[in-house]
Image 1: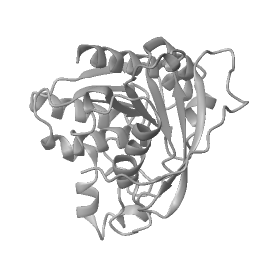
Image 2 (image 1 turned 30 degrees about the vertical axis):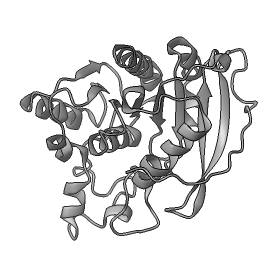
Image 3 (image 1 turned 60 degrees about the horizontal axis):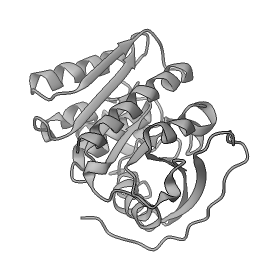
Image 4 (image 1 turned 60 degrees about the vertical axis):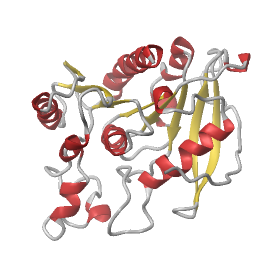
Length: 273
């Protein structure tokens, strides 16, 4: 169940974005009641936003060590993709190492609650959106790829389509990386937290055709093996999905290319509804 909360927007078009694109880039301040703090997000509106119609929304999550501005400052094509596919793109701030879940050991970290119960209702209240899972998708890179699949698997009532680029879809092989143990406790002492909060162990939540999925990872990426394992597990359960492997590593040139396929996939899903 989504709880609506009152949040005050602060909007401006940032000067560091490429203003030659027709899409409009807002930076908004939202307030998380769950975490008692203000959280920024970028909202990209397509060039036809003022026409009066409603638009599907893609939530685009950043990776570890980055923030809400990462996609628009490091992937120059993202803003134009809002125009190409006539979609609103929302880039929320997931903190540098949130992994987009609610921490069972640190109650100050509730990013699953923030995205699903606070940010989505705020976006739907303040923008002309399709307020239904049929018009809502989510994807991201690295930590954000984990977050996009994690949130969509657990909240299929909110998202109709989901994707991942170079996603950390199984965090268990990396118990000492990216400060994950600060959110889950050490793997040795709290294995159940890791088992319950890794994407590959949530595949049982899916049924055939319950969620449109696109998963992309470079063959030279350190997350390649865990993505391949996820692909095979989805096949075993007869869960249809697009799975893309291309040469490349865990780099911005790879993600700048990958996001084109993700947004096309989301657009095709929205048009089919």
